[in-house]
Amino acid sequence: MSWSARSTIMQQQNSVQQFDKDDPVEYNGMHGLVNFVCEQYITITTRRGPHKSQDTNVVVFRQFWNTVHPLSE
Image 1 (cartoon, rainbow, N blue to C red):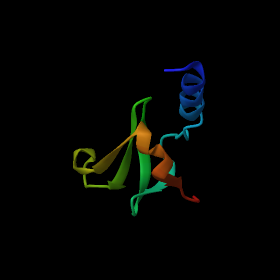
Image 2 (cartoon, rainbow, N blue to C red; image 1 turned 180 degrees about the horizontal axis):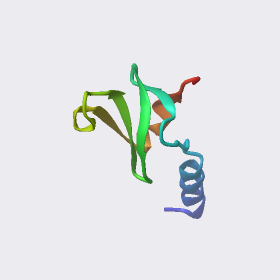
Image 3 (cartoon, rainbow, N blue to C red; image 1 turned 90 degrees about the horizontal axis):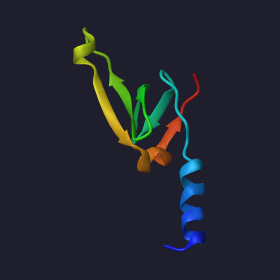
Image 4 (cartoon, rainbow, N blue to C red; image 1 turned 30 degrees about the vertical axis):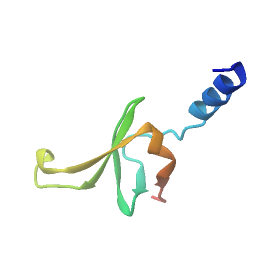
């Protein structure tokens, strides 16, 4: 891989959207709150159950973060 190709990849990785816990977002037609954030993926809680163990969370890997859209609070 050439130096310019590596530089382009690093620029793309650094421009990835950042998320915080409890950010309201829309992903693939679903609305929810960001529940967990790490370097590889985020989880979005799309449904709250009577107990936390019954919540529905969607995992979105980093390469798809560009398809997650912030919503107004």
